[in-house]
Length: 136
Ligand SMILES: [Zn+2]
Image 1: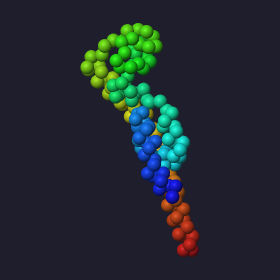
Image 2 (image 1 turned 60 degrees about the vertical axis):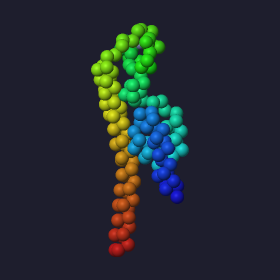
Image 3 (image 1 turned 180 degrees about the vertical axis):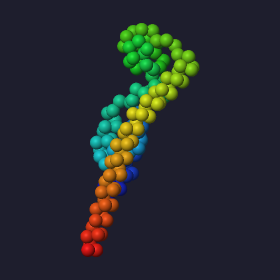
Image 4 (image 1 turned 90 degrees about the vertical axis):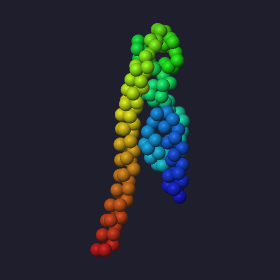
C-alpha cells in the first residue's frame, strides 16, 4: 500500500526539486523510496546557481565569480560595477550554465537509475531462484 501511494506522491518532491534545477527523475525515485525525507530535503535545498543563470535570473560576477541578480548593476559581493552583457554573451552564458546543469543532473540520474533497477533485479532473480528451488 505504501508503495502505491509513494509512486503517486513521489511527484511532489520531484516538482519542488525541478523548480530548483534538480533532476525530476532522480528526485522522483528519491521520493518513492524516502518520501518524507525527500519532501523536506526538496524544500530546504537552494536552487542550483547554474539553474538561475540558465533561466536568466542570475549572472556570475566576472570579478569575484559570485552569483548576483541579473538586473544588478553593482556586485553585492565585491561592489564592482557589473558589465552589461550583449545579447550574444547573455545567450552564451545561459547555454553554458544549462550545460553544467545537465552534467550535474546526469550523475543524479545515474544513481537514481541504479537505485531503481537494482532492487527490481534482486526481486526478479530471487523469484527465479525460488521457482527453481520449488521445482527441484
Ligand atoms: Zn563581484
